[in-house]
Length: 313
Image 1 (cartoon, one colour):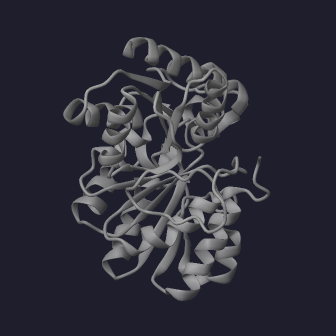
Image 2 (image 1 turned 90 degrees about the vertical axis):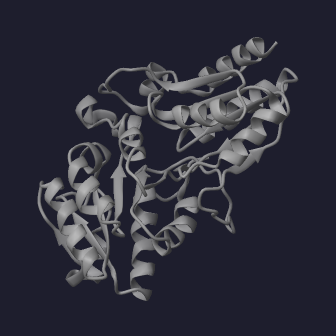
């Protein structure tokens, strides 16, 4: 079921709650304040809200400067621009300096929809994963986002947050406890383990339901923190089921699938199927169409799980 509120509205409300308690929190925008739903924050905290214009690399450097004065800056743009366009500034000015900056990359993957291939971040996780000290978090729904933000602010070092702006499919219930770097076990099963992130978690749960009708018991894990990844949960799932399927709204190169493959290769080699975008750029289209075009629907996950089971045998 779709949530009633858009993720960006919950994000802004949570930011305002945190800012009321912590005057170090500031918002830095690259001319997308309305797009990120942050106008209420700017109205409530005009002295702590900065619009630097369409200059994302400069935004990263400004955030680094603010961080050196003790502020906790959140920088915002579409995921393509907040990562790919200002990678060197993030690497040197933020990560190399070990500064506390929270980087918001909105509309990752198919979330870009009609903005098209140039605005469709299918490589942002891969880019951020290689940076030492970087935490990468992708919320499934607004409940998880609201629970995670204060925890991520409290920890040291830079954070990259892949933020889906629209209303998400509801997965978590009120009272959910966020554990940084620890996978959420959403469903138990001994035949195959489906490891998913972001909007693909809901698809993974639907695929598991379809498999169960045929007597196939699939476990479903939500890896919300791709870095540092929960290696213990992945290896445990591999040992319990003997086969893994990963699914992500991202290229299979360098993202969740790669991170899980690396973990399995070093800790518990088992058959692995990676569901995700396969070495291509994005395109214009509505989200439902794009998910089918990229092969990241529940049906695609189900088919991958069945193939993984055949490979296991």
